[in-house]
Length: 382
Ligand SMILES: Cc1cc2nc3c(=O)[nH]c(=O)nc-3n(C[C@H](O)[C@H](O)[C@H](O)COP(=O)(O)OP(=O)(O)OC[C@H]3O[C@@H](n4cnc5c(N)ncnc54)[C@H](O)[C@@H]3O)c2cc1C
Image 1 (cartoon, rainbow, N blue to C red):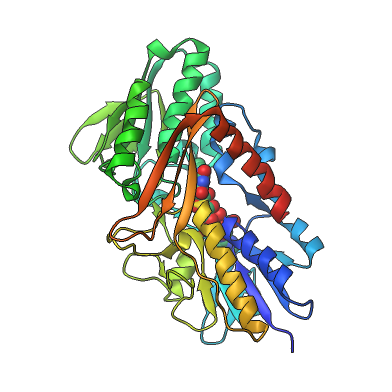
Image 2: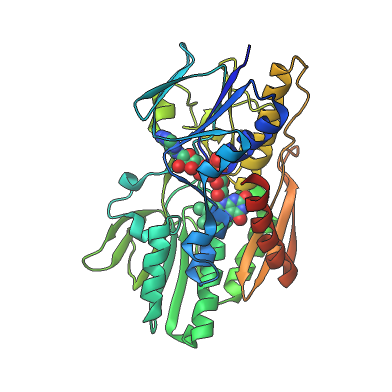
């Protein structure tokens, strides 16, 4: 009797899970992937849209391409997850499942910051395009990158954005006319990677003349006078503002009673199994506590490796074998520093008592490695 594996979310975790399952399971078993969007969005390339390295069309792939591989794609918003009945309501249609993989990612919580819109967001295409448009005629002024809340996806991204902006201004010959600042709620860059990596990243941005303001919590944006206000009472006027929005788990996951006290979905750190039998979760939606008490960062590399493990374990179970695959907390991430160079951080995030992370110095090689990875990603999964 064929089984049905239902995957919610066609982002980095969801597409990997769907592909791996399809490869491991016979055709009698159905793999259905549901996403509200028609496109898979490759976020690691989003910041390259800002400096013209990519067009928006170059960083997406249509999810219905998966149909060719025998993966059923449905474009629909997930409305309800019914764990007791093993059913999901999406786009008004009911989907029964034997196994469920939740890969719905993290949502931007605009309501949590008065004045924030997608057009001001560093993590939305509309925000990147609005900034790119403004940069065309920009001749100088105050440019702020602000991290509004933690955790957020890709701990390196705001630092990369500031350095890419620095490079844009340098190439335009207006760097000396720009006051470039990075405000963040964090107490250091990439906190989970430890103080040494944090100091290295801080050193990189400060060497580019980017002023760094840790432990700054933004409380509102006022568009009429282009002003941001911080919890400590400081007010600053800006000419260009890009904000990393506060993140939250999608309501549909909360409504299913799946969230833990951290506000994210707790899973077994090695198997990615949720508390309910047959239910797995991967990627940004999950909350995985590390040995030092911090949370595993939200990053595509973890969504990818977790999805491989969850998919293999489900396939082994369906194929009557004992699941053996285990996620070990290994991961790496490129850090774009502008000028066509990138650093590379990698390590064991399940290290005890702390994650063991190493950072390799910026080189053109790592920038090219990221470009090759992007191409491999689309080739491998689509
Ligand atoms: C600017 C930027 C740069 C980044 N760079 C890197 C990098 O260099 N390296 C790295 O490892 N990570 C990077 N990341 C992080 C990475 O993109 C995420 O960690 C990764 O996408 C998480 O994968 P996911 O599958 O958990 O979620 P996502 O990829 O976000 O996918 C979630 C999917 O669920 C869908 N969805 C949500 N709610 C619903 C609903 N109710 N109904 C139907 N569908 C729904 C969404 O449409 C989406 O397709 C970056 C992120 C950003 C924003």
